[in-house]
Image 1: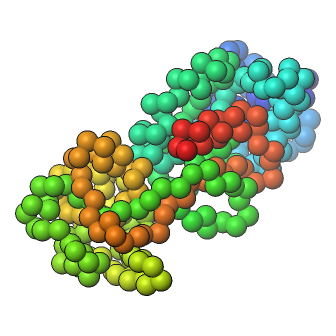
Image 2: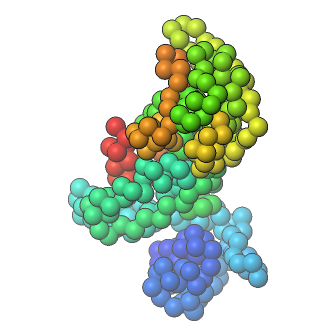
Image 3: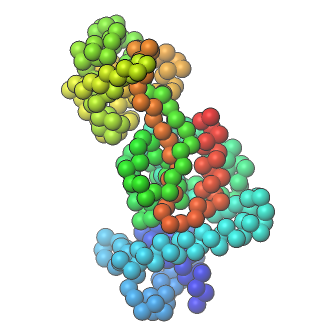
Length: 292
């Protein structure tokens, strides 16, 4: 049994969740995948996968093996890339996690040049506004915004966006424009639960003015915030990334320009304890270039 090949097969099974999907990704028959996993478990004398009618679930030993096997494969690919020189030979699958709205507006439309530069690389973009377990989900790199709660993450800040108070001109025509942070309390606020909640802190010079915004609509996704604002249901605090097309077209309007709000950081986050692959590093550098 080829140990590296068996590792790769196991990693694909965990990442795809089934023998058939792994076989399709590898371009081999499902029986070959099943046989490889059975031989691997026999050699290790440990159960790596639990099989049920709902699919495959890694055991505790399987998760530990997956993390180390993935790392070994990445390092092997790193050695291949280094031998080819200058990253010209980047190839294989790259699994990226990103917030839905950010990826839709600022990443996916710009994947073309990256794929042209690296024609042997395939990208899977996992869209989710919540943080995922990178190891369990087989993520090579995640693009996360805001404060990183887990200090143990391997992360690098790659961009920053201003936050602003905005709504549609139609909303402001109906309810008026706030002239001070205190005026915001008289408005219907669209509260983004994952984007800082209702506590908004304004700054001017050395002065800080925190408020607790109030509104009848709370949303758990940026897409929902956008829909509420663009349908004239209230104002919100949002990054310029979230409403970039509408800010450019004038479909939304910014108020309280003489006050500052905490900026929003974008981080590239890599699985802890694993060397970032050349593909992941190249992708992060590409996204950083798009935003600077």
